Length: 342
Ligand SMILES: NC(=O)c1ccc[n+]([C@@H]2O[C@H](COP(=O)([O-])OP(=O)(O)OC[C@H]3O[C@@H](n4cnc5c(N)ncnc54)[C@H](O)[C@@H]3O)[C@@H](O)[C@H]2O)c1
Image 1 (cartoon, rainbow, N blue to C red):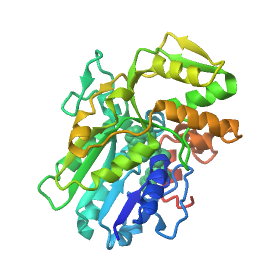
Image 2: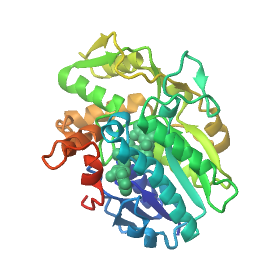
Image 3: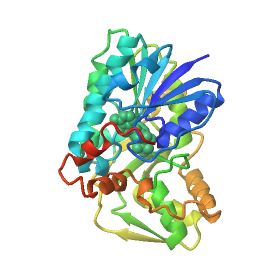
């Protein structure tokens, strides 16, 4: 029986991946420190270990007998990382170093790492970027992911093989729901307010359904040499105004309000041919499917509290910062350090 350890397995992508792997009969160990309110998937094949990736002593023993590690744990998103940049660097860069070292110590030979297309940042024109294109990160989130990639790529030649996937922006329903992701929150606004705001609108972004993101992580497990792929699909590159239009079509009566000023400097249109050719990875779902499933869930009365901070990595971290005991810049790091409740 395959045995996989997933860091950050209570998160948005992680909880979907845990379900998929357990359904396939894999034994799964989740290591998560509950930095954000997550979902613990209950299944006889799934074991949960409360632990911080920065402190391998808390979870190193769980690596015994593991075939591969899928490393998802991170402070995720530009806004959340901006709130406490120390914590972001410690987690996203140093945490990745710690995970790789722990793998090497335990004799695990395969490590899959979730990176991000945010690494491309602000591109100048509408040309597609690929893995060899210049990177122009706009945030500590992307900078820390790039440094983690560099470190993992430098392991080439060692017994540990790293497989890096630069994910498009993910969307869709998951056990741990996030409403700080563009498609999800814009759909929620359309359903509840009959209005969706588009900031700027011309900027390109690629998108990927959370079920497909989880499948892609599994497909990376079969690699025998180090790999770096963009993970998404060419036809799911959209300008943000197009996302507004798709949602307005699917949620009748929705008005699209375009605000001139783009609130996010990121603009990247990404080429995904390499993962298609090398891994035969093809998306099964698209933005339209997420809009429909979120609309359906909300019309059934679910997620009407979508604005609750628990669905947003930034608002969760901000809440922790504004608690009376936590006012210094590194307060989130202190509050979150060694958090084991989930
Ligand atoms: N969601 C997206 O659109 C997207 C896009 C590109 C890349 N990614 C990457 O995919 C991965 C998963 O993202 P997500 O959307 O599921 O985010 P998420 O915030 O829902 O999940 C991250 C998980 O990591 C855990 N975690 C954070 N710090 C930890 C620590 N020090 N020790 C142990 N656990 C810790 C959190 O508690 C959480 O469960 C991340 O690495 C992210 O950078 C996500």
